[in-house]
Length: 119
Image (cartoon, rainbow, N blue to C red; front, side):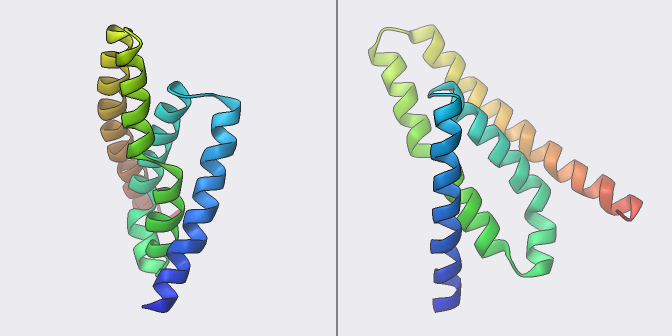
């Protein structure tokens, strides 16, 4: 229990720092979109091997949980909406959901392709 908690805390700190640095390079809301799509891809890619290696709590819950963020997504969408940028808000919400789902599937497919080739 305490080991898992430590892994979540450590991974969350790493993921949150990576999100912060990423948003310095590409600000919200589009930086948040990119972070969530990349995080979704990485979760799809790493889900099986992380479980096999026993590092899913550290990598998936901690690092990628800290890196991606639904609350930032919701805040960015609300800011666009309240600023009267309704079309951009709708595009951002639809793009975030659709691209993140595609990214998870792409990451999982890549993992299975690489596993089938023995890489």
